[in-house]
Amino acid sequence: MSNRPPIDRHAAAGRADGQVAHDVVGQQAATARLFFRVITLPFWLPFYLVGIVRQRRAMTMFARVRSKGRLADDALGREIALAWVAQHPERYPHGQYDRRFNKMERRFARIIQQHREDIR
Image 1 (cartoon, rainbow, N blue to C red):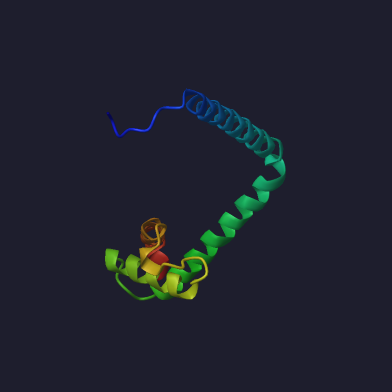
Image 2 (cartoon, rainbow, N blue to C red):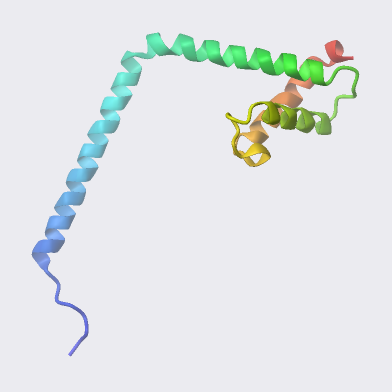
């Protein structure tokens, strides 16, 4: 005799049917969300883009002020990124360990390289 419990085929079929129904509803909800985002795109996209432009301008001004009179190198980009994170703890709760930190560090390095003449 085996210690395995007997298989209830009706219960297994019910679970499989429930999983299929759950997947179908999930796909319908994802399609509805995508459709809603596409329909409302002309309304929310300008606000989103204006926010991005404002943040990039603020980051550029911050980098230009922080790096005035210093040599542009990789350490300067990291130092400015750390100072930015220290000033905005609500956006970066994990500090330098935030998943967006590396991307922000590269962005500051690019800003420093682009505005190298203005910084010196």
